[in-house]
Length: 514
Image 1: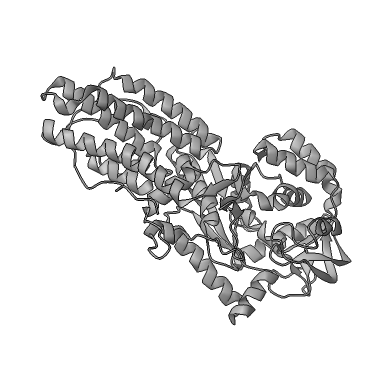
Image 2: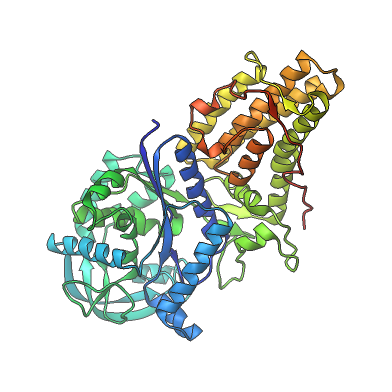
């Protein structure tokens, strides 16, 4: 229902390295969802940010000959720059080195401690610095002593730690999953999380004495919180936990986390348990997607298969990458990689989709309509017909697109939207207004096409924020399409006619595959 709250989060990204298209994939999806919910009139809050504590950051900084804070500052700025470059409309960018986050972490985990769910013990085990996570001997043996995620050798650590009594939350978590069957999506990831819980949960170490780069433990300042238990709390920091209880209570029930599958254990097991331990409700929704693969492999600094957003937006002649522009970049990742399973990135597929959907369909529709309006209607756009055959298509497309965005299925939502574009192009081909004399028939055909462009300029905003504003302007409408509100704005018949239509340069010049 319009007018509800919608709180969407990305993972906060680790500052040991600069952003690549895997980071951008999750962030563009979150941005598209935020834009869609703003169109619905929902009170929307979109959070992203950077995770800046831990041994991995400390080591990366030492390797670069700088302080940990300088490492965090430099790389966090790179993430902001990258998100600005691809038009990410976040409402808040959180950094875990901020004072507000320290206050929330200490308040949250003090509550867990006071509730009796944290105790001090001696710990030894195998640790992956890249994951900032301990692994069992069984997991290590299964992977030849290496990290299951990164394939790098695990290190043996031993120290006094405070432990979160995760083992006590096996049954409460199972009860929560049973009572909230849609809380983790898709179903396969929900079942994976249930499998982790049912095989038995062990208590987990949540503090360190071996480093100082972290949030101090309020009841024992010789310890700092281990990075994951600091990082997860960012989601409640940003909406006022420990500082603005009224705001936290208003927003937390509306949270939608977007995460990749490699951090499922932390978000779908540890995080709900931590919230229960603090006396809070677990997340409303956790939406898990697969990896964005390159050549069949997960992107990795060690494999040297990273691709950076700027290369695709602006092009890179040395790498033989054409310039897709901001909206070309965004459209590809929303349309060609369905949310949920792994996706495999290739430049060839990106060029093909760009040319087919953006250049040949949307770009061609605007170009041919504007050209014929200039020639046959003296550049003044006619109004659509109430009984246009495209009216029913537009209604069906809105229903399908809205359902898909609600299901966090951007690929399906855009497929539905492009159905309306294809139908409009087919309608023009069938009636060929460029061959007719000026008059009522030409006006009706072109008015219908202009109404399609108006509706598409609204429905495609989540993917193409720059392009849709330009389409809106060229067909003579005032303001910007993002000011419109759905579902009312998608109803047929609202292009007023009598507006000056501009024939401009191609929206999406065709590209050649490398």
